Image (cartoon, rainbow, N blue to C red; front, side):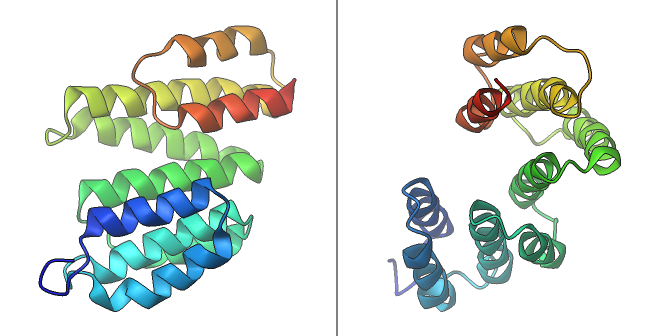
Length: 172
C-alpha cells in the first residue's frame, strides 16, 4: 500500500496467484475486500477483469462474459487480458463462429497497435496461431496434435503457454 492505495499490479498478481493455487474462495474475498483500495482510475475495470478470471477458473463462463462486457477497453492491458479470457471461454464452450472471428479481429488489433512491444505482440500472435490449430483439433479438423504440442513447447514468446499445454493433454 502507498497512501492507503493498493497498486493495480499488486492486486492483479495477488489474485492471479490465488487462481493458480485454486484458492477461489479466498480470491473472491480478496477481490471484494480490496476493491475500494484500488486507484480510482483502475478500480472498476480491474475488479471486473479479475472477477472475469475468477468466474472463468470456476467454469462460470456466462458470469465471466458478463464481467467482460462491463470493462472499458480504453487501455491495451485490459483489451489484451479480456481477449485472452474470451478466447479461452470460446475454446471451453466450443464456440466455433465466435472463436474464429475473435482470433481474426485480435490478430488485426495486435498488428495495428503501435504501443505494444515487439515481444508482447509476438507472444500474443503466437498464442493466436497455436490456439487456432488447437481449436481446430478440438472441433475435429485434421491437425497433428503432436506437432502443435511441440510448437507450444518450443515457442519462446508464447502467452498462456501452460494453459495451452494443458489443453493438449486433454486432447490426447
